[in-house]
Length: 574
Ligand code: NOJ
Image 1 (cartoon, rainbow, N blue to C red):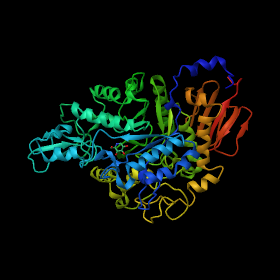
Image 2: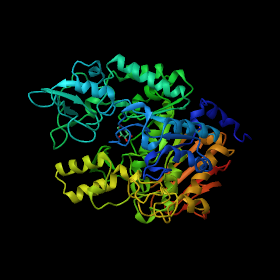
Image 3: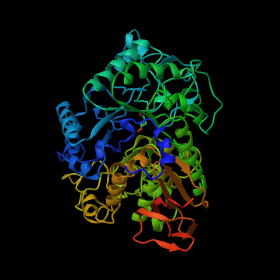
Image 4: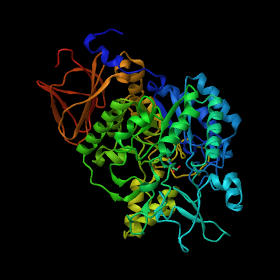
């Protein structure tokens, strides 16, 4: 690569290169991606069949949400056999084939590691539950109640107490951070920890490229298990106070890393809610527990707490900007980040972040895509995001499948909201919003399945928002994502866009802009408002533009509503 700015070169060289920094990851929610056998449920063969699509998009790695044996209470985040494949998704043979076909297409695969809890149908838990003398009892957390009441007043993430009464035993309870059918594993028990490490290594030996590690900050609980001052009308207090990222977790996470990930050429991506920026060094620093973690600060900007959707905020673009910058600076100071706009737990981004409904369209989708994709870190694209898929609007709670939507609906009403208001919160935030079937084409079932009844209702806009139409339309969201991936990974600006320094730009409140400085300076500028805005001093080669035109002024550029630009800054321009 030609070096125009030798004085800036050391900035890139400061960054240690690693293969996982260069990936573009695509997240698959298997139940909703592609149904190859027409039972209304997506499956592993469906992913294999769609590899050409993924290859054309340009992504290099897949994160596949849980495919393991499960009663599917939380769609696979309740595992009953870590080494088995859920039959509705296929067989181990199907998975092996996917792994080898993906490899041939140059696509790596990481899986979801869910080890804070299992399903209540796991043989370990069944033995623990049914036999108080079982060795497996110590694999989980069992405690005696408090005068006919649960052992303490902690609230689970999905609502209600974290404690569930053990049937046929007096005054005995087991602990669950999430649903009662997801009992927590007891990480205090070294025998259990070893079982987990063996299982992780078994999968890594199979040739997967690593793991996304689910809810990992919940594995350590304060061992006093004492009450906390209630923080809701139900008299309970969130499990987060004493059961998330607590002192002592360090030992578990270092051991997990040492006994598993460190032994392999693999990547570890932690889902680590509750970690403060001051702790980033421990999590993603040189000797961090993970290669990268997701930061949820701005993903949850519309709600005070990620798990209680009735606590809505009136967030402003300026705050979004500050949070993104703060997050990027903390990550840059300490290590590497996993950047995302959407995932299977979040509503669709255009509905969440584009305040003017008129722009909840292709323009808005591309603007948001630009904003997140060029941040410093590995980009994670969630299925359907590359089409600009949106939230749906459902008229009754019976239309929802997601366990946390149903809990949140009930909790909202407990807090005094009407059923209509509760339904509105759920519509805005439901995890089902991002779990609707992927829209492949404009047929009745959006090409997801030949079955007329997919497991979850379609959004309803697939006649226009679908992969087939967008592949052929040069200015579609999908083609824009292809261009972004190409620019980051295949163009002459690759080194700067992957390894370049992140520097925030100072602009008016509703414009979010930053530079990536490496061999050259690339500027990323997004107008997140419905007002046109002049930005002085901008000039250079336009590498990407979500509008077909650009308005040059004598002293800069005017950005149209929700216009996004990627610009190679002119050499003599400051
Ligand atoms: C986080 C996962 O992303 C979510 O889907 C799941 O419900 C919880 N962890 C529990 O595993």
